[in-house]
Image 1 (cartoon, one colour):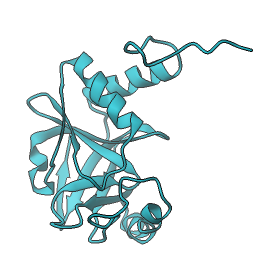
Image 2 (cartoon, rainbow, N blue to C red):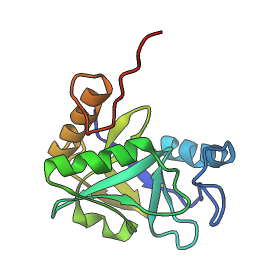
Image 3 (cartoon, rainbow, N blue to C red):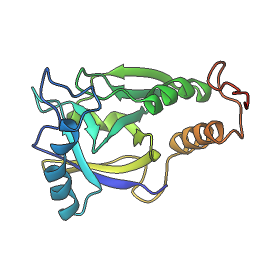
Length: 180
């Protein structure tokens, strides 16, 4: 896990009232050009803002965003155009184990100063720490551009330990399947 940098995109990943919350090809094709532009600019990927106001964070590339506030809240964007993620819902639940208050809420790109740590979360990477987000030339650094924050590390380690069967998860998360 190494923190990486992201840049906001002027392109929309999903249309307002469209299929952004569904796993369909059209939701990914629209990310190819903005992702390429972000990579050419030296960033990991694009930050997609809401398609109406272009102010609220929706997703980071193909992953869900989370931020950990300085007052102990684990926040993820709430929007009808965000793909629901089992990883997101798992981390919302596990955040409570570390004394964080989980919340799905609107997250303005102009209010990033409230976050001490941030990350992209999804099935493939579990968590990819976000070192910074640049919006219209203004760069906001979270915990560090080179080191992973303590909550991000704890959440990653806890979820992957559950996934690999090294630790027991919350009740009902894992079910033994008898061999035939």
